Figure 1 (cartoon, rainbow, N blue to C red):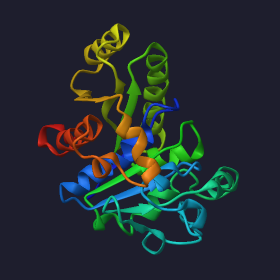
Figure 2 (figure 1 turned 180 degrees about the vertical axis):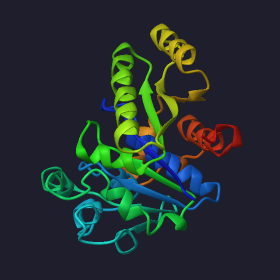
Figure 3 (figure 1 turned 30 degrees about the vertical axis):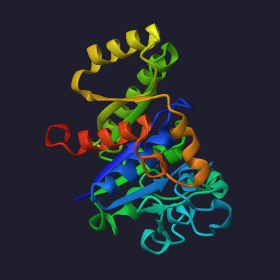
Figure 4 (figure 1 turned 60 degrees about the vertical axis):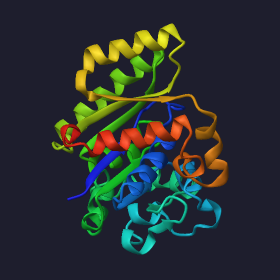
Length: 256
């Protein structure tokens, strides 16, 4: 059975897409069969996987509306060596169109049932909002990976997200758990970063990944080349952090 992980945070700019793309590539490097689902209308995970979102006519939009199956729409990221369910701006319209459809919160979960056996991991890059798209991601997943910066406002956003996860678990997906918190864009020279990091460890214990993702130029550069940093410059500190994160996730002790 595939481990289905939603990469989610209602706050934007915390490294959700960077984490999704680089974790997918890192797991693929480890020999795992991976499907990355781009659930964000911005389509950044699609671009970062080396796929031209403007030239992609069939996306996760068709899957959510029942106009196509995952098996016929997924494509291969040649740079990352994982499968991708792409997205583009067309997905923004799904928010309105899903409202009147049956099982509107569980359509992604239903669609994945036909291909889940093909993969070891399914990663879902959720949009930076509590939308019907995000809810579909949380209902389909069994774990939530929460990337967050170590700053004051991030703590406020985290409490909102934890509340959302609890409500989804209570009403829509009893199997959903917080898989882990990932500290991103970490600067050890910043006192506030250290303080927030310590608070996270104090309150969430072993739910906080040991891996710290630093601020790193290569992580920012890689998407412009249509590839993950672990492919673009595997020796960079950012790439090494995501390879370490993959090892943590693969370790039996981390399996939830």
